[in-house]
Structures are given as C-alpha cells and as structure tokens.
Length: 115
Image (cartoon, rainbow, N blue to C red; front, side, top):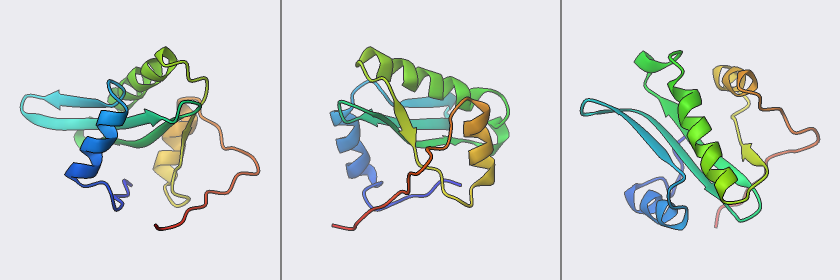
C-alpha cells in the first residue's frame, strides 16, 4: 500500500518537484490520473518515494513504464544507484520491486526521526 506521510500535501509535493525537476511522472487516461511516480535524488543516490497505479491498471506494465522513465531521468543526472523503502508488510509491493530487478539491501535497517 501507499503510505502518505507528513509533507505529502500539495505544498510539500510542489517543493519536492521544484527541487527535482523532470524526474517524477504522472500517467493520465482521459481526465483521470491512473499512475504516479515520485522520484528525486540527493546528488549521489536516486530515490523512488512513491509509485502508485490505479488498481484497474495494475498488471498492465504501467508501473514499470513509470519506473523506467524515472530511472532514465536519474541516469541523465549522473546517479548510479537508486533506492526505495518498501513497508515490511507490503508483500505485493515487495514482489513488484523484486520482479523488476530490485534487491533487498543486506544489513540495512531504515531509520528516521521526526523534526
């Protein structure tokens, strides 16, 4: 599932997009948003922050296409490695990421702090 965190409001996303131009993607069918990929980098590593596809479009290859476009954008910035954090109870998400070639990072434990 997709986890919406503090800072994922309209203003926070707009600031993120301004700092990471031309990396994120939106898929539209008619007037409906059917997929989004929020992607950025810190100058060294690329990060996929969100990848979400409307359930009616899952399994169609849309998620992989959005991801591939993000990764192409990261490559153009010179980034050599990208990272995603997947919730440990998100079995479907983990299966997707492994299917498209991503690997668990041995010895890594995600950590954070609220500011």
